[in-house]
Length: 113
Image 1 (tube, one colour):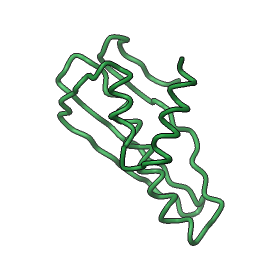
Image 2: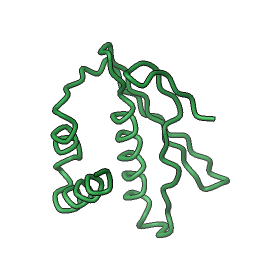
Image 3: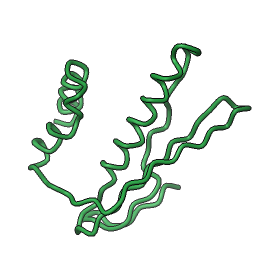
Image 4: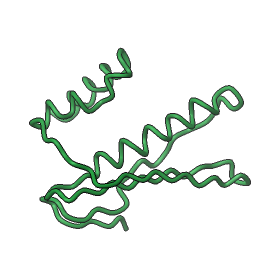
């Protein structure tokens, strides 16, 4: 059940943040191990709009997709920005965590519309 997995992982991470999502995710997913060849995280700040855009890219030579690794990297980077900004501005929001592009893996290529 997807909702149950999301709730369980959310609870575990809230109780023990250094558990860092992946051990439980890997357990649920059958313990796949992926050799990443590169990971990049970029943050663009628009001072006038009071916004930041976080993008993460993960690559592997393995025959699998690594979109979850990239999305976790972007999410944790956004949470870090929130944590650093909350003392100055309490209404910081994180929105639109989504997959923009993916190539390879079992499900093939994807590009967000």
